[in-house]
Length: 121
Image (cartoon, rainbow, N blue to C red):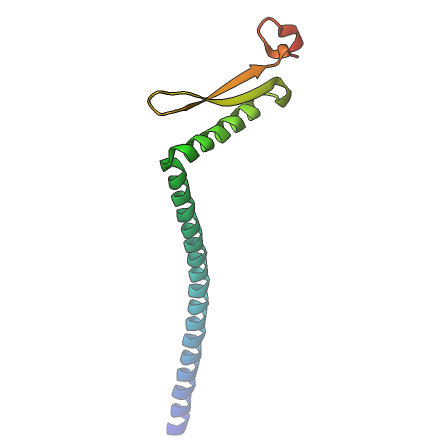
């Protein structure tokens, strides 16, 4: 009777230990997946931080900032108007206070000029 009781207690303990081991293994697997997601997010944050610093370097220096602005303006104008309807020209004019100032002129083709509404379609 005592041996049977001891065997039952031992069996229950083994079942409890196996259940605990399974739950622990599952928890560790979940934790590993979450850590992988956090690690990937950290990599993205690090890359974004580097991109922000690079942009900050561009925007803090007048010459690269001007070139960046010219590229952005050209992209905006190119997306807004048909390619065959614009002609861009960029040149530097003297500016007494800063030494030089860039200018951008847009030339619309004849079909988009005021008075030529019939040729726009």
